Image (spheres, rainbow, N blue to C red):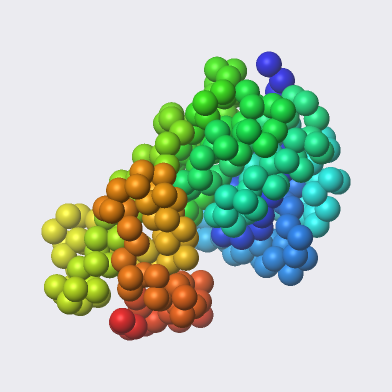
Length: 295
């Protein structure tokens, strides 16, 4: 069994920078890769701010921050970043074709022993593995947002993922102070197969004028002890991401219960994607706090 020392994280968005932060915090050297240098710069700023929050909560020290940031290098060249990696974690846009193309490239660029993991929240890991010549070393590693805080990693076993690969990923998850939970490779896995229909039903309730945005969220928070209402949670995840996952579920199972609500489709088409565009079911301030109902 090859030891894992160097990690490459592909994609410097919300999930990618969180994954890089988490690995570096636990002693790994990380290459954070993105084609956009602006995205890489923004990612490092975000990591720095998030570490400051941990310092303010007395979870880390200023010296810890220096060490964590020193372990993260940024790179806009995929080839230079992954040629010596032991584990690559893909965290790009939730688009099947884009991920398949990336896995083909990674298979050619990475050393044979390198494990290829996807942070996909719904796309078939078996299909991604089929783009490579290392199907036994391809696995789903679905982190939850915000990555430095959330304990779960949904470890997705593709059809030909080896026992050794599963064991290595589970052990590295524990090293990150996470709890790995095994699931098999079917659309949405477990987390989003259950969560997304719940969010979609809340959107349908709003669409059908059963209740308003705040009323729906308040009922679920006070009545079901949810820390965040489903409509605010959808905004937090990204309405475009929710739509993409629902489409994967609908296509994968062919069951009408997964069909995205027309209101969600219209909001995404209008560019109202939630927190990241400062408007979804709520309006948001620049520091990402809700400031009023938008729908």
